[in-house]
Length: 68
Image 1 (cartoon, rainbow, N blue to C red):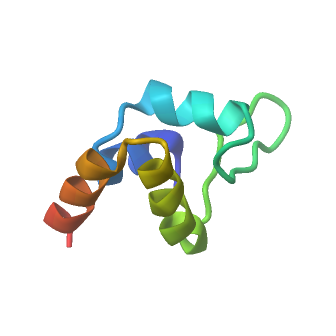
Image 2 (image 1 turned 90 degrees about the vertical axis):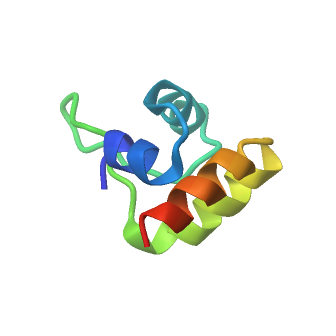
């Protein structure tokens, strides 16, 4: 999924997600040259845990539950 898709699923702003990815706090790959960040679906639970650690969990949990 893309940063934008993850932002929609978690309710966390895409800019915040992108910054966390660029700083190495969230797992993602960026295919060259200048490709979009890609996040594995299998990393979603790990990402949710990290968002909780960063104090962004409430928004992320509420949004994730509403998309089920």
